[in-house]
Length: 402
Ligand SMILES: Cc1ncc(COP(=O)(O)O)c(C=O)c1O
Image (cartoon, rainbow, N blue to C red; front, side):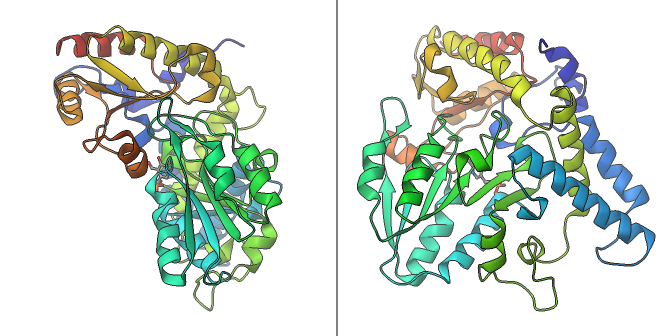
C-alpha cells in the first residue's frame, strides 16, 4: 500500500486555511502539537449533540458517555499494545498525570532510595521526580548525553544503576533532537535491578508503533494532541500497579483502575475526539488497528530531505543524528542554529513567511544546557501530512537570511 500524503492532508481541514497573509501555512510546529483530523472535530461536536452528561448516571446521555469512554479506552489500549483497556487512564495532559504518578510512587519510597533521570528528557519527566526527591530525601542519578549526536550515554546509565535504584524515567524519543532511545534495553536493565520504569512516549507515539508489552515498561505516558487529537493526556500502567499504588484521590470515587487515577470529572468531549483519531489511524493502517506504521517510511524520506536541505544552507548547524543510514534512530524532529541569528529571530522570520517552527528549549532544559545553548535552538518538527514542497519553502525562506 503506497502512502498518499495528499489523501491524508484532505482529512485535516485546518491545513488548508489561509493565514492572515493569505498564504497556506506550513505547520512544522508538530512536536508542540499537531493539527486535528476531521474525525476529531466531528466526534467532539457529536458528543455535545448526543451524549453530553456526567459519568455514572442511569439515563441515556450518561450511559452513552460511559459507553463511549470505555470504547475509546479499548482503542487506545490497542494503539499502545496494552492487554487490558482498564490500564488506560485519561487526564488533562501528560505532565499532570506524571505528577500524580510520581506522588503516588513517592509514598512507597524511603530516604536514600535512588531514581534515575536523563539529560534528554522533557521536563515533564524530570521535575515531577525532582520534586518527590526533594520531598522524600531520594537520591537522583543522571544519565548523560553524547553531545556529538545527541544520543544517550548508555555507560552513564549503567553507572547510575545500583541496587538502590527504585525508579528509572526515560524518554522514548527526544522532543528536541528527535533521538529514539533503546527503551526496551534500558527497561530490561532497570527491571533486572528491581526498578520501576516510566517511559515518556509523548514524541514517539505520533511516529512509531508503541507496544508496551514489547517495551516491558511499567508505565508509559503520551498526549493525544501530539498525534492529531485533542488536548488530552494518557497514562498506561500495569493493572496491578495501578490498583495498588497509593494515588491521591477523593473518597467517594471508584477505587479500581483506571478510575482511581482519573481525579474529578473527565474531559469527555475530548475523549470522544480521541476516539476519532484512533479510527483515523486504523483507517490509514488498512483496518489493522490504530498505528502510525503507515507513515514511518514516508516520514524518514521527509527527514532525509529536510536534513539534506539544511546541510546546504550556509551557516546552518544541525544537532543530533544526521546520517541517513541511521534514520531509524530518530523521529522527524530536527534542531539547528543559524550563524548570526538567535533562534527566536529565525523563528520570527519564518513566521512572517507563514512557516511555523519552534525556538527556545521547548522544556528540554537539560539537553540545551548540555549543548551549551542558553537561547535554545530552532526546531522543525515534521509529521505525515508535511510535504517536500513545504521543505523547499523552508529552504527558500532560510536562504533569505544568508
Ligand atoms: C517529550 C515530551 N514529554 C512530555 C511533554 C508534556 O506533555 P503535556 O503537554 O501533555 O504535559 C511534552 C510536550 O511537549 C514532550 O514533548
